[in-house]
Length: 111
Length: 115
Image 1 (tube, rainbow over the protein chains, first blue to last red):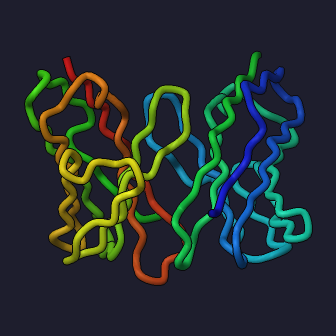
Image 2 (cartoon, rainbow over the protein chains, first blue to last red):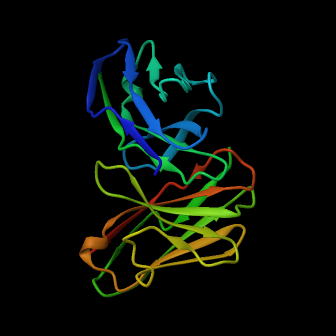
């Protein structure tokens, strides 16, 4: 079946550091790929998405590129802030795909 | 983006009672809704998929008689946890997807505590 694998956390960084959270997927065909963010005690919010190969999703300084050849969708940000501390979920879905989430990666940013 | 509301946002109930959680799609008609369960510091576990006007499709291992899902209209789906037990305590999140829409929108979640 379809699956999403994320790097395990927590990821701990200092403010203004560069962030990478790795995500790879297994699926038949070409699903859409998503990154969601969950702040403590809240539901999930869509952070960015990409619907086809080589698409780059971006939002709030975060970026991720849909790489079909490596079946990856790594999340990056050039300079993290304390307010970026949250749990980040990589997911696949769209169309007829059953939405499938990774285990989530906790990001902790220190001042 | 689309707005999804859930009610209640948190609920405490006694063991053996039933709890109903509502999920509303506020600004578009959701033909498909999903119910997820999230344990502390873990990912979302899909419980069931419901399509308006038809029976829900439950994931393997989810008791359909315990977690009753009703999707009576394009804007409302309900999850009823029947005869709740402490192990049912969790964060329940609903999500909707409109026909042809290539993303999902999530409700804010309902924290259920069974004492």
